[in-house]
Amino acid sequence: MLAVDTSALVKRYVEEPESAEVTALMDAEAVWCASDLVRCEATILLARLATTRHQAEQLTRRFHADWDTFHVVPLDERCLSAAAEIGADFGLRVVDAIHLAAAARLPRPVRYLTLDPRQVLAAVALDLEPVPAPED
Image (cartoon, rainbow, N blue to C red; front, side):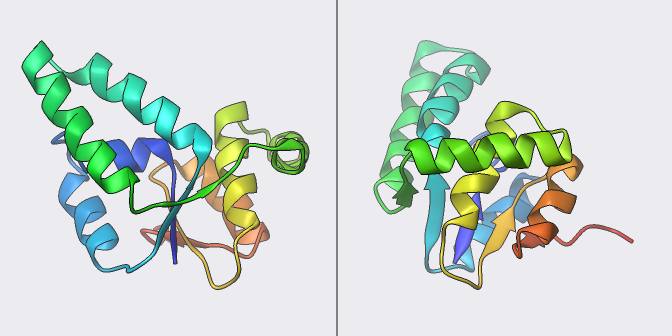
């Protein structure tokens, strides 16, 4: 099972340095999961990153086709309470803490796809396997 944060997921649709790696990691996993926040964030980010209206529509269409296959963790009181603790304990931004709290609710083992090194320590502490693996 692969839990995905927004910054990594967007690289699947917008060509950036880590895009090939993100796509390969996602394609190698049968089950994708994310917090419901990812849908909102990714939709906004893809619209912002598109250079034309047509490109925005294409990116959004590709994203929504993938999103229909995701197992979505709801943003309920339980998730937000856990996010508050995770954010405070690890000094994370609210959105990052929410992604981690959602992933922490999933049955193990869970691989956590993030390209944000700030989230890696928290992921490990939450018994999530960060991918790509952090460089030593």
